[in-house]
Every structure is written in structure tokens, then in C-alpha cells.
Image (cartoon, rainbow over all chains, first blue to last red; front, side):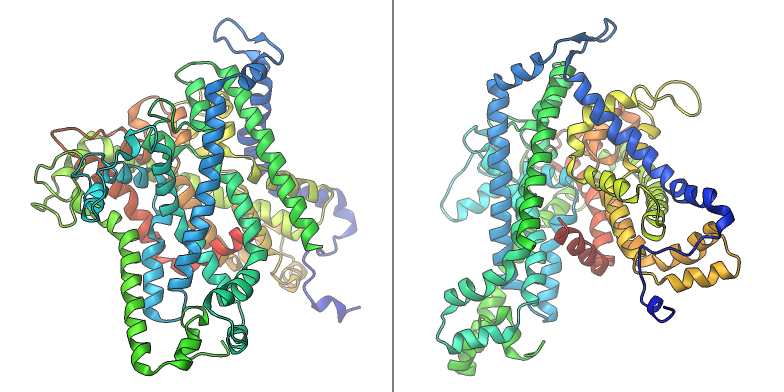
Length: 307
Length: 301
């Protein structure tokens, strides 16, 4: 028995003296109290309050008026919201897939123990840590639609352009997606670099001795080895990507003419400019339900695959 | 690891060519790779660099015109931005960091101590509750949160938390990520250390402050890095909570500085540069911490 206890058993606690039982039981709750208080006031209460408000027409000074499911019915029939949802899904999917593909390519190119490669990786990673607000302001300048805008000057060298980027409804969302991919691809790169480092190099040797070409080695050795960690990360990334606010709000403000509007900025607009809190709360509630449901689905799917 | 030599460049994808071709072709291949690498690095670094260069140019530039080399190097843009509220923004962001981050770390390590080192009824439920907030996007509760901040009275003086430092800081204190990281870390600390102290008559508070917290320094550092960025990047919350520009954090100041025909983009980009610098320095100094924390976070989804 005494020898057994030498291995650290994390959940087991030191035996409590019998007389202080009642007080002992209270101790963990005292340590948890501040955190629970902050979570209760600034997380759970707003969540519940949002669901509550979604059933009302919110009227400052006049008192809220019960409207039942009216806000939700309106949300389902709101064409602007429908297109915002569509943009959100496209944006989240394209950003995650684009970043993963670009991040994978970056990882293949920059993986390795050499000091120079490490330096390159550090440099490439910089956009990830920079605040999205700074990135968005930077790119709104770089993507200036005139001929002498930075991006258009570069394209001019290649004989393309000038492109309107953020100022045209046809290219606004695509431009935002490119900025997001630019910012998040290096993040994926680091994940892939860690994954690649875990692959037994002898597998490559064996495969090439068997006559496998470069693409075949990629297809049959690299990708299968990376799959288990990445699919889940990427799926959760799509769900998280649907929260996009800052990029859209700063780069296009949903425009031109709603062409790049997504759910969260649209919701913000309803609550602030349109001063329609009940409707905004209904949109938030729907969005919350969908994200939680999707996350749980992914986690169940992961749980089933791991078992 | 097993093959430390030439095969370990880029995935071993290069290994077979190295086996079949002569050293000359190998050298050419390596040079080509370095060139491609440099182009890729330029794609990610030059935009950031051009932001700095444009911010430091004092020559009049047209709207949308960026520089790669500062034109008429000068700090005029930074001074203008400073006058237009950037100084205040920097101060407000610093206040948010100092109070928000220390509260966040203190509250999280206390909670983690209970969750990792105590066995009590309801522990699993608390863990689930806290982790559940990870999948609830902050953006979704932003508007009801703003309404609730408008209901909470100031602890000192009158009014509500709306348009106050309290309203900017307190909602950021409860965050699941540091609790998660610290709980996982504290579970690894051997119980013997605690038992020995208890035999010597030490109480919970002493054990927590003198044994557990000092041992958690690496995990606390990781949490500090993520907490710093989380608070530094706040944008939607201050947009809602702050009503007088004197309380705006740097992020909001940056977006409120307008580009104009006379000033070009320089002033706005000067403020964005100031917003960028602390995060970049933080990353460059603590790179290892950063990547380790990022990987542990990402693999857990």
C-alpha cells in the first residue's frame, strides 16, 4: 500500500483529519468562488439574459413587451440575415480550408531543424500574433483600389489589374478571406510542422525504395500520419471561424451593399444602429444554439473515432 | 531523429533525389529552395514592414500609397496619432492589461488549485460548466453582456460599470483557457510535496501560495502570454462598453483614426504600428512558450 502511493495520483487528496470534515468540504468552493462569480455574472447571466430578451420586444423606458417567437420568425424570413449566414459559412469554410492548404505548403517548405529555417518560420509566424485590428487597418491600406495602391502595384508588375478588392461587391468577401488566410495560415503551419516532425523518417525511405514518387509519398505517408490531429482541429476551426467580427467590421463594414456582411456584425448593427435589441438577441440565440450543437456533434464524432 | 543528416531537410521529400543525383544538383536544389523561402517570407513580412515604413514617412503621400523605405524619415505621423488619442489609448490598454491580467491569473490559479488538487462533490460539474464556455462565442453574448454591465453598480461612487474601467476589465477575468492549462499542469505536481508540508502543519493557503503557485511558473507564463494577447486584442467589448473616447483602448483608437486626403494613411498606420509592436516583441522574446502553449491548446481543440 505504501509503495503504491509513490506514483502521483492526481485526483487523490491528502486525507483530511476527521474533526474538520465540514470545513474541509468548504475549502475547494472557497478557491472556486471568485472564478464562479466572474463566470456567473459575465458569462452565464448574459447568455440567459440574451435568451430571455429574444422573446421580447425591447423598449427602453416603456417596459419590454412579450412577443413569443416573433423575433425568431422574423429572423427566419430576413433576407439580409440569410445572406449574412451564407457569407459567414463561405467565409469560415474558405478561411479554414485556405489556411490549412497554405499552412501545409508552408510547413513542407519551412520544416526542418536548420537554424535558417527556424528563422524563416519565426518571420512567417508574425502576422498570427499581431492584433486583428492592426492587420485589418494595414490591409485596408494595402488593398487600396487605385492603381498606385500597394497590392495593385505588385499586380501591375505581373500585368494584372488594377483590381477593386474591398470596394466591389464581387470581390469584397474574397478579399477579406485572403486577408484572413494570410493571418492564420502560419498558425496552421506550426501545427503541421509539429505533426511532420513526429513522422518516422524511415517511412519515407522505405516508400521511396518501393518506388513511390514525391506525390505518392505525400499521399500515402504524410497525409495519413497527419490526419488524426488535423481533421478535428480544422472542423472546430470552421465553427470558431463563424464568429468573425473585427475583420469584416474594419475592412468592409459588411459592404459594399451587404456583399460581405456576416452574422455577428449584422447582429451588432441590429442592436446598435437599429436599436432592436430583442431581434439582435434572437439572432444571437439562434447562433449560439447552432455553434453549440455543431461543436457537440464534432466532439461526439471525435469521441466515437477515438474509441 | 534517427536520420539527422541530409534526409531530414523538408520532410525527407528530398532524400531520394539526394540519393540519385550528384552533389551539384543538390546544391542547386538547395539554392532554389532558399529563394522560394525568401519569397514566401517576403509575402508575410513585407506588408508588416511597409506599415512601419509608411508610418515613419513624413513626406506627403497619397491615400493608399505605401512605402517600403521611409520617405523623409520622421515621427510626424506618430506625433499626430498621439495627439489624436493614441497616448490615451495606450494608457487605457495598459490599465486593462495590468488589472485584467493579474486578476485573470489569480482567479484562474485559485480555481485550478481546487479542481486539480481537491476531491469534492461537484468538481466534474464545475469543470464541464467552465469548459462549456469555450464553445460559447464571446461575440454572441456581447450585446446582453453590454446590457448587464449597464445594470451593475460601480463598487465605488455612483453609476454603473458602463463606460468605466470596471466594465472594460471585469468581463475579461473569467476565462476557461488559463483554468484549463493550469489545472492540467497542477495535476502533474506530486502529492508528496503537499503531504510533507501538511505534516509540518501548513494550511491550504500556505501550500497554495508557497508550493503550488511557484511550481506553476511555466504554466503561468504560458497563460500570461495568451491572456496578454486576449486583452490586448479586445475590440467588440470596448466598442459596446465605452461611450466617451477618453476610455477607448488602443484597438478602438486605431480604427477611429481616419485616413484623409491630406494625411494619407500614415497617421492611422502609425497607431496600428504601436498596436502591433508589443505583441511582436512579446512573441519574439517568449517564442518557445508561445509555440508550446499554442500546440497544447490546439490539439485539445
